[in-house]
Length: 72
Image 1 (cartoon, rainbow, N blue to C red):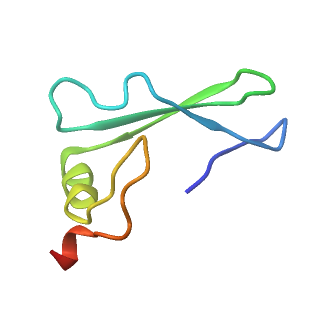
Image 2: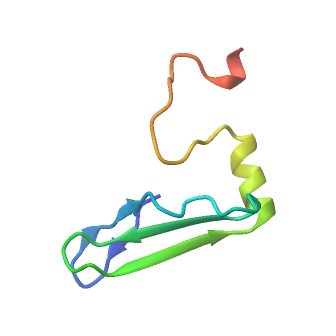
């Protein structure tokens, strides 16, 4: 999933600060347009966060795709 800045038609970049709140029940992600500086945020609830976590999705970096969790 990617977010576009509508006025600039530029892909927004993920901001790494504040990705996982302290309570670890909600996932908050911030995106910023590198051209105009406009920011947006996406907030998931506890159940959405658990669902994504159970799928093995990791936020903020790359994983070793040669050794997926479901093949261990």
